[in-house]
Length: 189
Image (cartoon, rainbow, N blue to C red):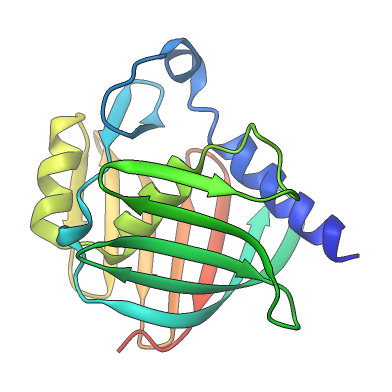
C-alpha cells in the first residue's frame, strides 16, 4: 500500500513537471531551472534567499486529478542548502532530495529516474523564499508576483497560475496551470 501511495505522488510530480515542449527540448547544463509555464523559465534561487531556516517534520498531502496522496518528510533548509528526506511511518528513509552549491540531486530506489527534483525545489522556493528575490526571478521569466504575507500569487498576465496560502501550521500551494495542489503541515513559526 505504501508503494502505491508514493508511486501516486511521484506520478503527480512527474506529470506536473513536464513543462511542455520547451522543457523537453531544453538540454542545457546551465543553472538548475524549471518551466513554470511553457515559456517561463524559472532559474532556481540560491539557498541564502530562504525567509527563515527550517528543520522540521512535515506531513505532505497532495492532490492530482481525483486522487489524494499522503507522505511524511523531514525538511532541513537554511542558507547552506535544502535537504528533504521522505520517510515512512517508522522513520526509515525512502528517498532524499538535496539542493546545494547550485546542484539538485535526488536519490531513491522507489521513484522513477524521470522525476525532476528541480520542480519540487521550485515549489518549495515559491512557498518559503524571500518575496523580493522571488519577485525579481519571476519577473525575469515574464511572470508577476504578489505577496501579502499570508498569500502569494504568481500570475501570467492577469491569470493566476499558482497560489500559496500560509498560516502558522499549514502551507497550501495550488498550481492551477498544471492542475495539482499540496498541503504542507508543520510548525512554520
